[in-house]
Image 1 (tube, rainbow, N blue to C red):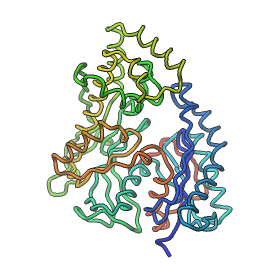
Image 2 (image 1 turned 30 degrees about the horizontal axis):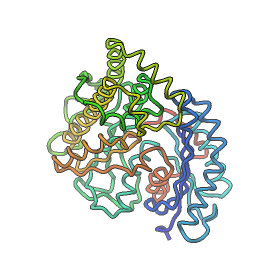
Image 3 (image 1 turned 180 degrees about the vertical axis):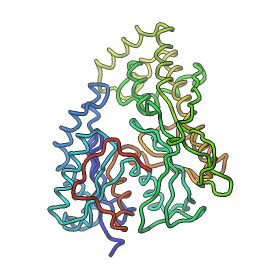
Image 4 (image 1 turned 30 degrees about the vertical axis):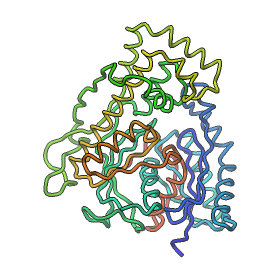
Length: 411
């Protein structure tokens, strides 16, 4: 029966090898992730060649573990023969890393004579939230939805709709047609998560930078250092985003606007602040201290003690400014396009201040907002299997010559 169909999801777009078995696009039986964080922390960022090598080492083991855990959750053996489809990330991501997952998925699908489904990584992040909302039987959000996908590699705003749903209708549960997405905002340079990583490295903190800044920021004054974001000029008409008209909020009218993001400027502003306030010596001392004790966690008292009040104020001010910019652009776009709900996903959606301020603003506006669980905030394969479900129902399968698309766009 269709409601018992199982999809094996495979994700290898960056530095995490993941596999998951999901029933009917909404019920994850397993979700296994092999992280490479400790390896790349030695370099302060992801090294593509090393990431590809680790994917090769991990992918078979991760898929086997996903089937083992799915069997335990189902209460009976779940084997390759029980799968109804294989879903894999097509892009965007690192070319070599993507190819590992795609090559394995293609071989598996061919050997099992199962359909192969290609999934956009960004759509996967959106469906991570939708999957959990359906699984929790929460009050359905109405369409259209505005989705903010914010992570180390992406900061995008998408207007998400479904071809079988009307304006203001409830979020579909099971549907036989893929979703439609319209990109209404994106970063023009660094992604928000990338800015977190770079600022953390600049201040002598650990990698990835997001958890460090999130934990340390409450110890500082978020208004101590005023950061401003310059107005981004609208893109040319062929790439620009037109404001909706009043009769139909999702239809364009004359005139362009932009809900784009830019985070390279605040990264440079943090660097200049450290230079003008003679913070280099303290930063180097902190870097040596963390190198001598690599097991220190962001929440440990020793980590906080290694940051002087000036550094903590700078961290708090940086995070306050970044979250504020994400909030302003997102809610401005939601209002302009008449969104009936808001979805926030991606690794940065795990940030505690972001969740708190977005929830408060959404409550003030009476706009439903949904976040993924912390386990599904970062890259995982359950989201890939969930995003593949509408494609499975509509039989939108991948061609035999499927390959990696590192710059793949959504919408």
